[in-house]
Length: 205
Image 1: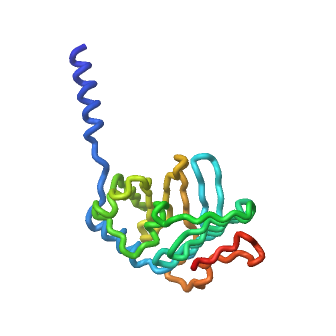
Image 2: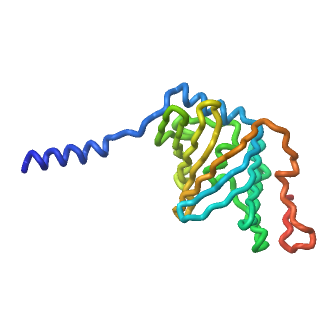
Image 3: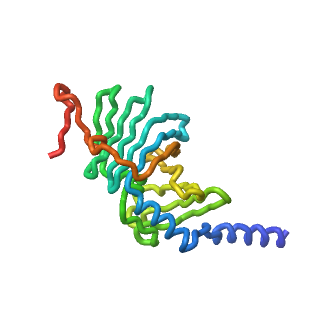
């Protein structure tokens, strides 16, 4: 009996001492280089959530900090970031919400100065197999922002998916398809304007 309890205690303590896998310095450099050198991106996306909801649409990114996500029917939502603020435009409800960049973990992929150095971003989990590489990072200086998971294809090396958990503890996964990077994108994609006759029309001054 004593031996059993000793073994159980050892296993319990060992579980607390297990450290998450860590990427090599070369892998960190590869991820940073890809994200920091990406200029534009256009892709189809499929979004799934742990609550069972699904959506799809098109995404456009122009770095730094510009993004547009057009959700297809029946969702009828646009998310537009012009570099200063993000607009969530629910066209069905005719409702506009303004969101701060700092409140959204996924906006890290929009920056040009990403540093996974333990100070700006810290690796809390890592996994790789023959074809993919997964890294989970958190913001050590921003404890109120949830970690983000980034998944890359190895050949060619490119971002294929990210996962975040929203404030309601719903895990949201965005998968990219038919992605084209460093293509010319119209700057108007990242400008939000509603019909002038609509009382919710918003113009940043």
